[in-house]
Picture (cartoon, rainbow, N blue to C red):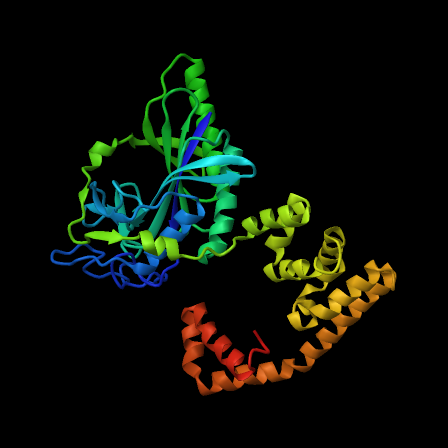
Amino acid sequence: MRIGLEIHVQLPTRSKMFCSCPTTSAESPNTHVCPTCLGMPGSRPVLNRRALELGLTIAKMLGCSIPDTTWFSRKTYFYPDLCKHFQITQYDTPIGEKGVYYLGKKPIRITRVHLEEDPGKTKRVGDQSSLVDYNRSGIPLVEIVTAPDLTSPEEARAFIDQLVTELRSLCGLEAQDEQTVRVDANISVGEERVEVKNVQGLRNLERALRFEASRQSKLLAAGKKVVRETRRYDEERKVTSSAREKETEEDYGYIGEPDLGEFHIGEMARNLDLRETPLARARRLVAAHGIGEATAKQMVLTSSSLTDLFEELCRHVPPEKAVGWTLGAISANWSVLQDPLGWPDLAAIVKDEHEGRINDNEAKRRILSLAGVAQEEAAEGGDDLVKLISDFIEAHPEVLADYRKNAKAANTVIGHVMKESKGRYS
């Protein structure tokens, strides 16, 4: 069995790929639109620089070769959710090619990474009608295409799960949902491959691939041929069904996008600093401190600041001792011990226990004591925090009104509290 994935990741930008329309969710259909994302005559696209930076960051993280120059193309096809009847994407010169990403110790080849705009969203109404919402049209996407190196539905699910975990940290992706990550899965049990289009969610991906593997195996066992086609996954029935014959690249009639021109991206890519992702950090901890892979993953996925403390403790005691205390008594009280100002005291306690000046029980008692002091200090400051928030809302009632429509309005209150408390509450 061979499985290749085409992963479409919505990039967390404030505006769309080629216009200034917002990418936030809208209360009503077809409100976050303009002549550009609706493809009106005379409108011209302008590339979102932030989307380009995020795409290059992902390509660089995946070890891709990045060209000095890139450009966009028009991918022509006729479907209601594509109002201008072509999609602006990349064809001849993707921003990244020939990369590799490791699932555990297994290398998965990355064929290409390219940028494109999302089409709109079609909603079926009854058996004969559909409605189209173009709010999503023009949302920036990065598409990651793998070689057919995955060999089971379970492995495909693990690959997406691991990749999305890293991308969340690298690019600030929100929790995975249908607007963040969608997957087209290409699977072949024999010679011919079938594409399962627009699968949403890890569980659905695994179920769709399992069903399709079983379907193809039964066809081949009966002496029949597997037809190359595009299929859709029915979440309720948990089956795939035929959608259309699989197009070839020639069917799309790619031509260069004349309104965008060329982009020189080599220097930009070289100057990008990659943030260390949690799983990359886990691999470094395994190599640097000799701890187990599962332990390292547990730590980095629990809390980045807890991992910072672990690395601080490794300066004073052996790694195995640091692991025991970090994932034991310290993590159990982490909600009140995470302030870095108290870390020297924690390090002193762990060091005293390691060198025999106190026993294990005394070290735990001292850690609990530190946690109790921190808890009392937090309780004493609680009244101040409530007053700061209530005073601000009383002076700015419009913030509360905005919050009822958009939860992100709470960031205004949080920023005020952090400023007035000089970072005490953060």
